[in-house]
Image (cartoon, rainbow, N blue to C red; front, side, top):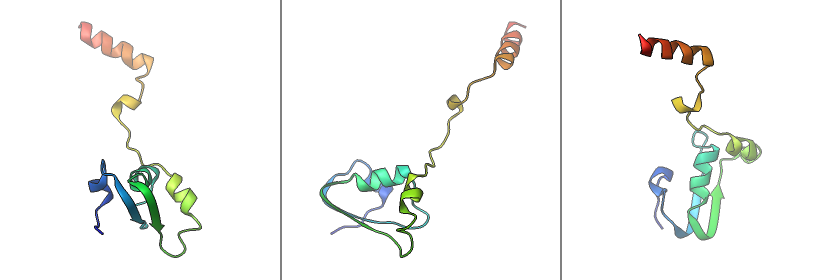
Length: 86
């Protein structure tokens, strides 16, 4: 048996995987990587009391936003175009 971090496990597939949840490493993206590493058997361990909120906690997304996720408003586009023409 080996231990590996979720970040290091990206792209790795094994027959059996065990996931140890912690309070600060729980979101939808982390959970997907953690629980998709196995072929046959998956075991998930969570701290006492966390199992009640597990669905809500793992459903939360902490995906980072990119500048391209935002649309530039039309008046700003016009002003940029004017500056380019000057």
